[in-house]
Length: 198
Image (cartoon, rainbow, N blue to C red):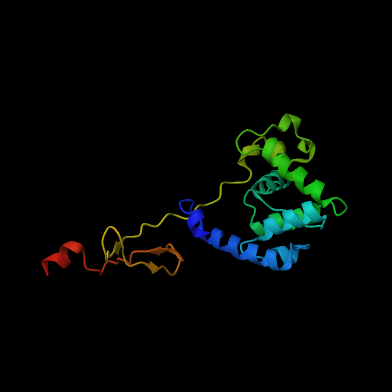
């Protein structure tokens, strides 16, 4: 699986997909939200989407489009994941969850877009707090991104161009992948120049 996935990135997804496929092959496809959520790599959004769209279970989806629609409709500049899920659950049409979820996601994807919302044709315009404010694109405020961290490491080649020693990485940096032995450098680590002069 990892070889077929090579170069795509997100290797944990490949491992989870393989594990989930094994469970589905052995036990069949889940029929309910909790069982979808129990599969490796399946989160609340996917579990809610599949269980509502395929099986009619009353589960509200919460993705970026739903977040934007609800934040604008209700005038929330900084909606947390919990806030979005709670509002989505409250507004969900219990009798037609699949149609409701698709409608809200489609509204966010085609009308209530991030940079150029088509408020003039929006069916929610008369109830929309963001439209009433005159600044619909101010809702929701941009998410604060975690600053990228620079990591310096040294790799050791034991072998040649044909064969080399590989190790399976642990932790968050490339965890689970195989590669040359790697040591993250710290301010106290010896630099290659210092090592060659000692």
